[in-house]
Amino acid sequence: MKTIETSIMEHYQLDYVPSILVEQYSALIKSDRFSIDPVVIDLRPNPSSLHNKINYMLEDESIVSINTHTRNKLQDLFFNKYNVIEYMNESKENFFNIIQLII
Image (cartoon, rainbow, N blue to C red; front, side, top):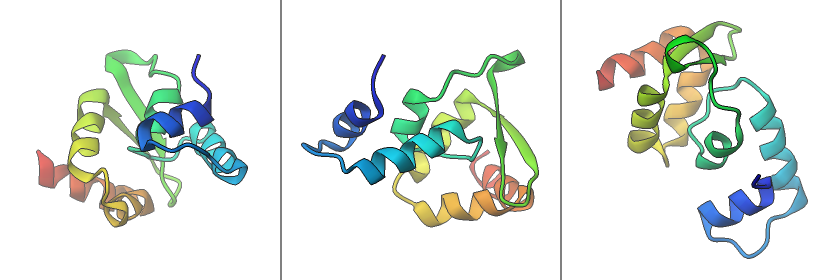
């Protein structure tokens, strides 16, 4: 099993990873917060629910579910667009506004 540090180094081609970054990734991996970061996707447990749906808790405390195909499409489109991901994390309405744009 990969460590957080190893995964960060592989995905971002780093030689050194500060412990604070490992701690931040650890918290994000353990949370249900929406993320398309490849390190988080690599190290979070795979969805075990019906139809490979992934549940995410947003900042407004609403829960949204998407399948892995949709998550991968979002990752391809918005990988370096942190403002889009932050916008999606704010509320269910924002989240689905972006989903509607890509469908």
